[in-house]
Amino acid sequence: MVTGVRLTDGRSFTAPCVFLAAGALHSPRLLSGYLRHTGLDGTLPAAMHVGRNLKLHLLTAMISLSLGVKTDLIRKTTLLTNERFPHSSVQPLGFDDELIATLMPRALPLTARRLISRRAYGFFLQTEDGSDPRNRVQQESISGSLPILDYDERRLLPAAREHRDFTRALQGSLVRAGMVSFTRRIGLSGTAHACGSLVCGQSAADSVVDGTGRVHGMQGLYVVDGSILPRSSRVNPSLTIYAWGLRAGQLAARQFQDQRATVRQETHYAA
Image 1 (cartoon, rainbow, N blue to C red):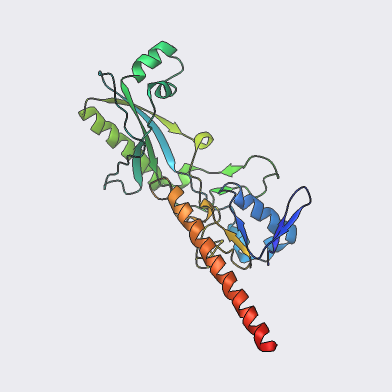
Image 2 (image 1 turned 30 degrees about the vertical axis):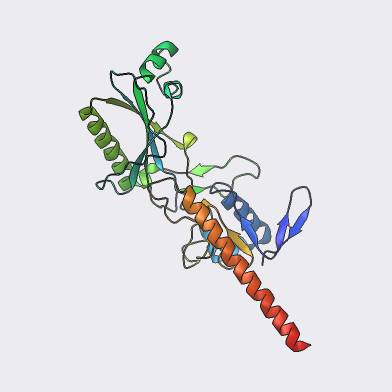
């Protein structure tokens, strides 16, 4: 049972429920460190899945050019999808010409980049990558260091193919609309939307937390960030993560209230 948190400065805080929400790159490192320190890494079935199944959207930035100067700006909240590519989506970058210029090749003079960017729209393409237990946050990462990721897109070939075909299809559609597009893949150094490294499931045999967010085999410890997502979906998962955190908190609060009510009732009968 987890009953509190001890900080590096020696202070301790106790609580009936502890919520872990350090993000999909740091929460598994904190949990794996705790499991190693307590020896639970060798006895808790869920421990073997901590840090595994890391998901990172496959991302591409696209700059689309035409002859006319752009005097408008497509809202970043616009979302484009296509039924032929069920795991992919497009969002406008929402950048003005100055920011779009930063995505141009550095070999071009700044003046040329600004001139081109005034005639450009920017797009952000992303594809859900899927799960592979070999894609992970390294558990042996040194405390306090940056996360060490073992992640390879070649383990997820269907996603890589869809992202490639999706990118080419959008380029083709924009050509027919009179725009020429250039792309830049965004790799690990610029990735976003990390999730899945403390994946949710029904059993400790293949997951870390249960449907309430509680770590399998442990009482009092809940995970309420993107680590729990079994899928990343085709869009930014932020709203899903918010909804999960609210749900997990409500369930834990309800359980705590029920337990207190039971204790009060038993104390009343004993008296």
